[in-house]
Amino acid sequence: MRINICGVEIDPYNFDQVLEKIVNHCLEKGRPEYVVTPNAMHILTLQKDADFREIYKKAFLVVPDGVSLLWAAKFLKTPLNGRVNGTDLFEKLCAIAAEKGLKVFLLGGRPGAAEKAKEVLENRHHNLRIVGTYCPEYGFETRPEELGLINFKIQSAAPDILFVGLGAPKQEKWIAKHYLSLKVPVSLGIGVSFELVSDMVNRAPVWMQKTGLEWLFRLLVEPQRLWKRYILGNPAFIWLVIKQRLGMPTSFANQEVRN
Image (cartoon, rainbow, N blue to C red; front, side, top):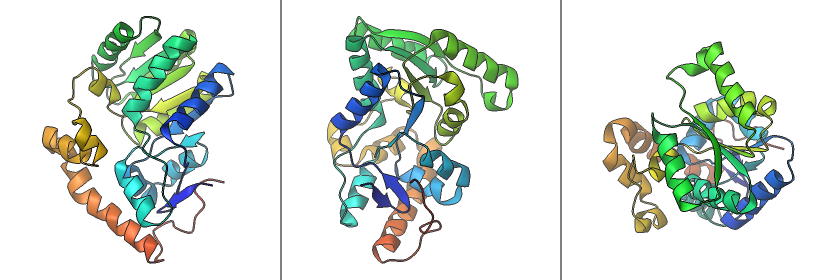
């Protein structure tokens, strides 16, 4: 049974269960699917973006990336079974891919981030097969020739897992539009994970991750890019959760997010 947070249905699986479901689907060469990793920003975006909500409806898994979702679920008396952080998921799936012989493709990130992440991960896991990386130019989503090139590169490489680091909701919208034609068993949007793994962006200390303060660390590291998300977004998310606890409607509280 999924957990409802502000109209968004979250799968209650723990980290290891999510890994198992993704890996098994890849090993079985199942039909193309994708995974979404909501945080508080996603919840806010979903309130006003109908296309994004439709993408969530079709997701293979909807797993809680942000600690704020764990707090919200507990406050709503429907606790989740732990955080499924996108970067941790990326790193652990690559480790398992090396063991199981699964092929990986990295799309997106800042210039050089995917290539550096590939180098780091292949040095860490000598049997890992990262069969391609590509960093599309800004505005690629409006250029048919660039979209065609991206699809060609991925289809030619035939990965089992596609990691997409384009930021939300762009990465989810791109995946939803192309995942069936790409025929990759599992695609995941993972935000800035390439940058974090390659040390282009510093990750918060473990104690800040565990105590839910990773957002504060990221705000201090990249204030100009992230201040609106956290300074304005966090109070808005808290108010939505309080409204749900009080039985007040959110902007799409009565709409079905996923069957």
